[in-house]
Image 1 (cartoon, rainbow, N blue to C red):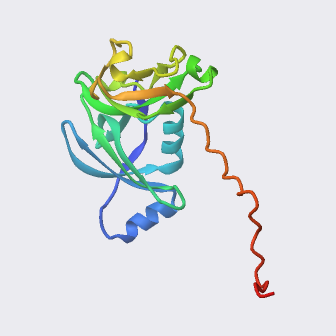
Image 2 (image 1 turned 135 degrees about the vertical axis):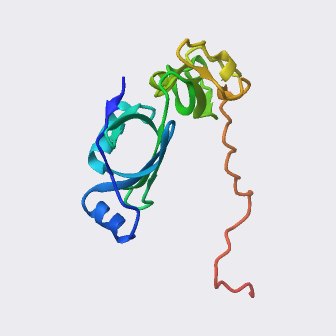
Length: 205
C-alpha cells in the first residue's frame, strides 16, 4: 500500500531559493520516470524522515503533482556529512504493475551453532538486489544462520524462494560463514639472563 507524501513544485533558480527551502525545513527534490517529465519539487524534511523511519526506504510514496497522482520510489537521498540532514532527494515514478529492481538489507537471524561451539561468525554480504513490483519490494530479508557449524557458510543460493520477489544478485555470493577462532600469539618472553639497558649508565668500570 502506498504511503501519502505531500510535495510542492519549486523553481530551480536562483540558488538562494534552495537555501531558503532548507531554512524552512524543506528539502529540494526531483521526480522523474514513468509517464512524467523531470519535475523539481520540495519535501518537508521532518515528515519525510519520519515516513522513512516508519515504513522503510523501499516504500511506495504516493505524491500529487499538478493535480496528477504519481506513485514513486526513493531512488537517492543525499545528506550532509556532518549534520546528517537531508540535502537532496530523488524520487522515481513507477508503474505498480511492472517489476523494478531495488537494494534491500540482509538481516542475520539466530545464533549459529558453530559460534556456540567457539567459532567466529563473519558476514561478508550486507545487501542484495531484488526484483519485484513496487508494492512487494521487501525492506529486508532475514537469513537464518542457526544451523551453521564451524566451517559452514551460507550463500544467496541457500535462501528460500519467495513468491513476492526474486533475488538478482549472483546466487554464488556468500553471505556469512563460521570459522574456527584463531588463538592470539603469546607475547615474546624476555630472554633469560638479559638485563634491561639503563639509559645514561656508563659501561666503563
